[in-house]
Image 1: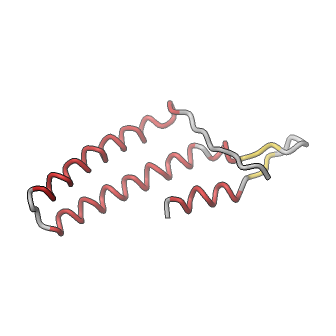
Image 2 (image 1 turned 60 degrees about the horizontal axis):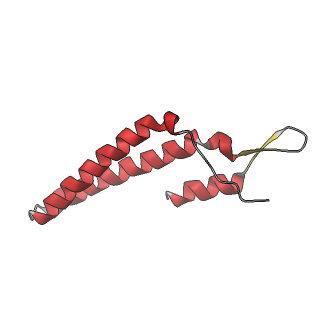
Length: 93
């Protein structure tokens, strides 16, 4: 089976873009925390929060693009490209 790319409509992902912009700001804050010598526990807590936010953004992108992972067979029925779905989800693991 030919590899299929998953494209998603950017208009459907405005909340993901907003989440990523928050993470971007959060990462800047984490860098400042490190540069200021803040407690490692505080830094790790913020890194974990940023990581969870990135994971959620990735899963949202995948779930929004699930329709693109469904291929039309010659008879017009739909078939899920399970290998592609698995690859995408495992990329975030």
